[in-house]
Length: 219
Image (cartoon, rainbow, N blue to C red; front, side, top):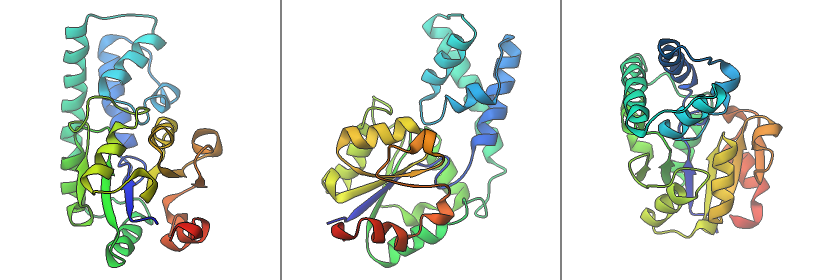
């Protein structure tokens, strides 16, 4: 029986992709590196340090570890400053309604995000009341596609992986859900999250009714 839901943050609850892109672009420009939306797409769902490594690989360059950390901090400062513009109106369409329905029906709900700024984003959205557990980039050492963040959420909710459904918009996130033994709902195109148990193009389509209809043997 499904008793809990675990949600990624960026691209599922809200869309901070544009803010991330601007921050990465500014950092890359300052370093004289090539950076565009194709490279940005490869950063979806992975940690800040791993993101810089992807950018470095794209530019056929390397940096010492201390410089990586310095650039990660610089990018984060740019991004965090931009979060001040977020409000409680910035949920993705359908996300707030789904979270509300889950609360009404008594399901346990956790956040499972690689972001180290998740608490700030939730505060800006006024979303904390919807979550029983907050799992973020500070909660575990291994980021997606390792399943650790989802296992953390399930453990804190006192549930087994097979009692939870994970919502993700990143390929690495679906990989992580599968590796941990969770059921998965992918949000986004077939080529990115088509390997999820169930896929929707948008969160607006991913209603609790549709999810229950598909996983009817589990409710």
